[in-house]
Length: 291
Length: 292
Image (tube, rainbow over all chains, first blue to last red; front, side):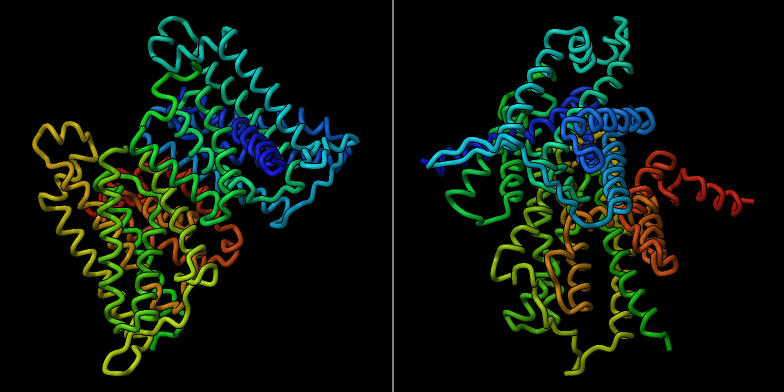
């Protein structure tokens, strides 16, 4: 029983992190039809910014806004400087650009911060919920709690604001949206800012949760996010959130009860390829971004 | 006599040329994307290693077995590619790369993280091939592959591939057998990777899963993209440049990923045809000078 509760909480924590990282990428795909692999590098940037702020000031709550602003800025610059130039070319070109950007940024982090892990010792005054059967750490509660708040904000942005409406319109048909007076490029830029800020928060959370930051922490996640996106039906925000939690729980339970017969990531990719072949529009069915 | 250092570099260069051509065939001519070429190279290398060590068969059987094995895998991938296009195909091949590395890391038969060692050198009349002879074999195979690809791309096959690359639906309507030619492109491309992997295994004499991870696939892609897709000279020259560059500019070794990443971004932004593609800056200069 205790084991089940602990797996459940671990799975939810993992799912929350997947959701925060993949929402930015899914929204970019929904709007621009670009697989934004470099998004994972932005998440690593967030982790490092958060670490630096925390190491300098000792204040964990200051780490979040700094990481959000830094990531949003870099995300916006990537859109303006690079994606805007290639968004109308063949799909292969933006994908290759994005992968190139991702591995180059990974190397930049390694060169600046060193190839080793930097440890992130942060203990909260509140040590979590402890019972005879199971324990839930404060870090897990922090991750799950922040995810709930941020996902609520995303839901509100997409469904209740004019920005969300403009995103939906440009995702459905860019030319028509433009013709109706939607400033498409402005909203695309906003989308990058918003998604990158979420990835920045996720970076800080992963740093706190695993207690370390290192230059290759984005590698596995960047490709894992593909799995989440495909499962959720590409470009579908709600589907992505559900797929994130599904994957987080499935991975944790498979490992707790069956052990490692393959690395966790291989299991996820086998699942992804099967879904791509047999359910090409994702488990959630065919829907447009933001619905 | 050539010093051994240059011989090693040239052998690796031959292997890289084969890998770059595998991308050249698949992405350049047939317009299909694979980001898992290192995995197919790995399958080739491991097949060769197992045939010659665990099964104890003749060392000359390693290469054909590797080609056969990877061609089979390529056939399956070709079948998958009939359902998936562009981005989705690309991320599936990334997935395949992770799965293959995962299987190699977790299966006792493949030696887990330690890989397989003691792979025999190729022998002829009970004598191991010298490094010169092995280099000769590699160069010979490279020339043969270049001729094969050159012959294919100017035949009906090449025409069909280019038709599929431009607009697959139109090619289909015009009576091109899309299924057949797509599968053939995948089969040829993965077989080339298998050949390269097998040559690598018999040269380095041990293989580990870490030689065939996703970053290696990106490296292989960079070779072909830098030179220019849609030509034969592009991948070949790209492979030569990127093999020699780190040897002459030692400091690049420390910035490998940064260099390859930036090469990909800059080439795609400013010269999507690569350095030596038909419409690229350098190639137009060269052709114009010749015309004069």
